Image 1 (spheres, rainbow, N blue to C red):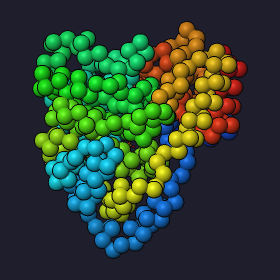
Image 2: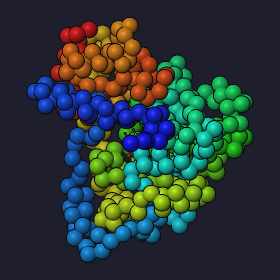
Image 3: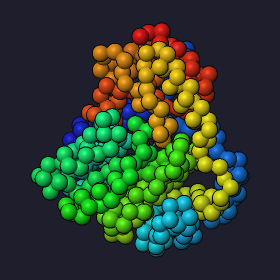
Length: 384
Ligand SMILES: Cc1ncc(COP(=O)(O)O)c(C=O)c1O
């Protein structure tokens, strides 16, 4: 059998690798505590499940959908953006359903990049920011997000040559894995940069509803210069604890939306109609609770305190559902994560899985109950 040369460049996704290691250890009877995967553990609002069950019963729920999505769904997304972010969207041309943000991010790279072109990507960042360009045969240039810059990109550090070669730039706030939120003015700066260099911008807004204190997270599209040059990807996975349902949207610049849609007509046949209708209903509700913020906050605070006690101090993140923890020994991120897995049976993700600037950190997801979180930290403390 022969496979494409491209596949030699494409590693197994970090979570897939971790899931396999966890499953193997559990099959051997090991009590693994997983802090590795940002998979909301609390069930969605029961009304959401009831609604989906109802929609599945409709005869036409089994028919082929279209990539463009039902008009009512696109209208519901536009209404939601107006209400939630004060951003007005044309439902006909500025909204596209995605089978999860991951799908959209991966295909966006194929829609925009050629071999030899360049994508500027947040580093550390969601691994698909790098995986998408790899699949398109294009290159990525990391935009390092460093603690001393509050995990914000420094556009001034991008060389003139790289800026000229770049076609796409991807960032996401509240940020996975650092938990940082976008600094004021960032989206406007990105818009000016894109305008100067002819770059398409993408803001990955997967954690829009996961900000612990202060102002809710904005949409990048609220900035007119960003909006002129880019799109935002909004996922419902974390906001409503429904990651398995695969519901997200690309919204914004109509040219980018139309190009992504054309590509997707060759790949998938659109979102399951029952999910489209459930999402249409959900986006119109104002009394369905968002993510369990109080639960995540309590876990965050407990974990930060306990980590400090074992000699792994970490600042509480402002958003998202992860702790971005400095490695407390002189091991690499991977060596430390492997040792924690082997010796403490706790799964954490090595920071370098999110990019080179993630070296020196591990990510811990706050998606397990407090008692198990406390136990995981105690186990790590015992092997330091
Ligand atoms: C920053 C970021 N973007 C996108 C996603 C994927 O979202 P979805 O479930 O909609 O594919 C995740 C999931 O962890 C994420 O952390």
